[in-house]
Amino acid sequence: MHFYILRYIIKKQYNSIMTSYKSAIILGMHDAIVSLTGLIAGLFFAFTDTNIIVISCVISSITSSLSMGAANYLAVKSENRAQALKSALCTGAAYMTTCVLLILPFFVSLGRAATLASIIAIAVGIIFAFNLLFYRGRGLWRHFWEMLGICTTVSIIAFIIGEFAHNLFGI
Figure 1 (spheres, one colour):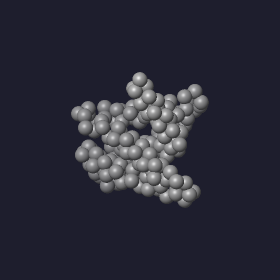
Figure 2 (tube, rainbow, N blue to C red):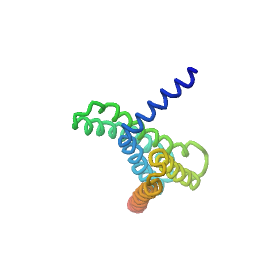
Figure 3 (cartoon, helix red, strand yellow):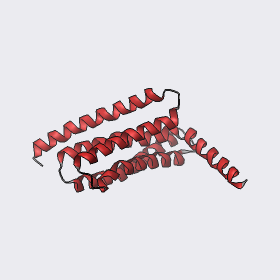
Figure 4 (cartoon, rainbow, N blue to C red):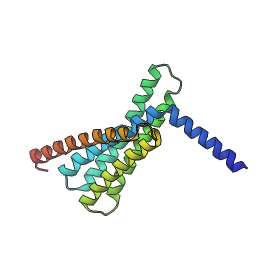
């Protein structure tokens, strides 16, 4: 009996967070995918040493998740809303969780092509899971394709910048 009560409370809290802080979670997750996949794509083609890519991505992930959380806090606080801290934590946590998932393939010996393919698959999987969670039946595919298109466009631009930097600096 206690299990069902606990499950009910957890489900109610989960639904409350997802409803109340949906925009904060979208902000963190989507910005992490766009920023980090763009960074990875740019660095992946500019450098052959994956240690440089991983270190750059870890530093960027930590600083960006803190920055996104702080920016969300200030934005929500400017509207005199009491939930600014919770909103900021949701944004930062969504950002950092997404980054961790995207960096994981570098820690498995897959080879460069398989690592990049894994990162792309993880990014698409995150986008799909996120949209499935928030938009079940209500524009799921429209939201999925829009988010995927934005992420892909930014990654292609980052790839071009990475190739340009590689050729310019000869690294």
